[in-house]
Length: 163
Image (cartoon, rainbow, N blue to C red):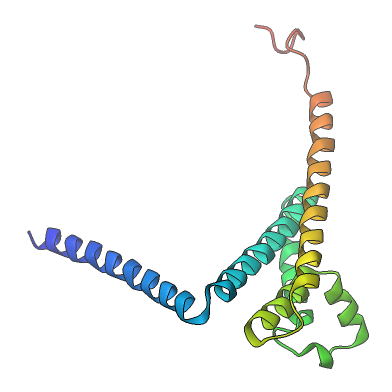
């Protein structure tokens, strides 16, 4: 009997937490203006998609080595994006490296949304370019590997596959 009550309280606690989360989110959106709030969420979804596409590209290109490359890129992006160190303090080399990775555009766009700025149009276009190029190159890699796999697989009529 006591276990059932604990489970019921646990379920109620989970429901209460979800209701509280949605309530806070709704009130934040209502009090701050829906356009600002939905713009922030939309931009965040865009840069998360660009990070996923870039990570997937390196996994497709390098296999398990792509995970190591992603760890390296994550470290570089943290430094060059301006999230940890202001971009004004970076050398020209790191500024150029930051321009080649999506995190710089994600941080600049987020700061423009949150603190006011010139707008996120340029950052949005840059992130879309990252997404299109990453997915395009990923599709090309998959297409080329698919042809290699087809050539490597023997036909069903070969003696190796017959019983």
